[in-house]
Image 1 (cartoon, rainbow, N blue to C red):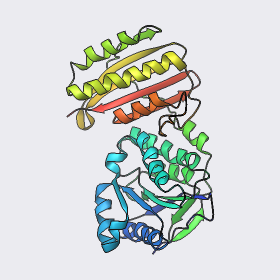
Image 2 (cartoon, helix red, strand yellow):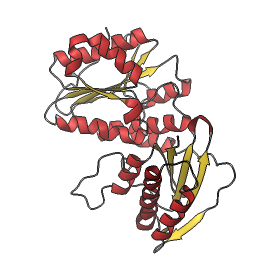
Image 3 (cartoon, rainbow, N blue to C red):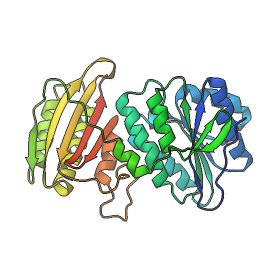
Image 4 (tube, one colour):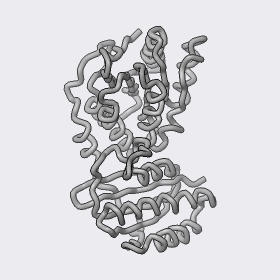
Amino acid sequence: MITVPAPAGPGAFVHPALFYEDLDAYVSGVGGFVRSALSAGEPVLVAVPGPHLDALRESLDGSAAAVTWTDMTGLGRNPGRILAGLQDFADLHVSRAVRIVGEPIWPGRSPAEVLEATRHEALINTAFTGRPATILCPYDVRGLAPDVLAAARRTHPTLIEGGQDLPSPAYTDAVRVSADCDLPLPEPEGEPPRFAYAHGGLAEVREYADTWARGTALSAARRGDLVLAVSEAAANSLSHGGGKGTLRLWTTSGARAGVVAEVRDGGRLADPLAGRRRPSLASANGGRGLWMIHQLCDLVEVRAVDDGFTLRLHMATP
């Protein structure tokens, strides 16, 4: 059984990556982590993909009822929603150390999802600083690409590999890793037109997006979600992105058929955690627009570079 260290004391945060080769090693390592937490009387959240969820439940037998279970394919479909889910659990036990298993990257994830999940893994280290928690992140060494495993070494201070628990020599500051995720976005086929907007033009943005969306396979409800997400993104442009921006809309086909809305402006992202943390009611500007966008969309790609800020909002179609 692999033993993962608990927080060393008040305010300590531990964030190891567990590299596993097969389901037996996964159940042994993750199951041992959960059993250790339960023995210590610590609250446990397990957020992993469905098949792994089932295997872990079965291995824990009667102890499974003491664990909070979440299917990561739902919570983490948009990686930008994961962090808030983990923080919400920790906030329920604010005076206690908590243990969390979070598996945000699994075989079959698209490259765009993997990149945003990698950004999430880096930002965990900032968001949980000073909190008594251990977040264990399993990685499938046989099913994931070498570059994904290399990124895991950069986003986790500690690695559990080959039965050993050691510091990661490649661990890198969260801000640096997040910036490294700001790779150029691929251009869509067909050169979709750009709709320019400025102050006073928010109603026109909504009308343009709604008219376009009526020609897609989105349901009426999801069409409304898209228009709301686009409106929030455009409103951010007007408030924080230099007072103007551009909108592009297009569809994708194949296994990941859906619609994409891209909003670009001249703004900067002052807080990399904006939209990923639940906004504070006490804050005048708590990232509520970005938060809502993350809740509405199936994937949000973020690019914060020197020449401006870009959001790509994805919604799947049936």
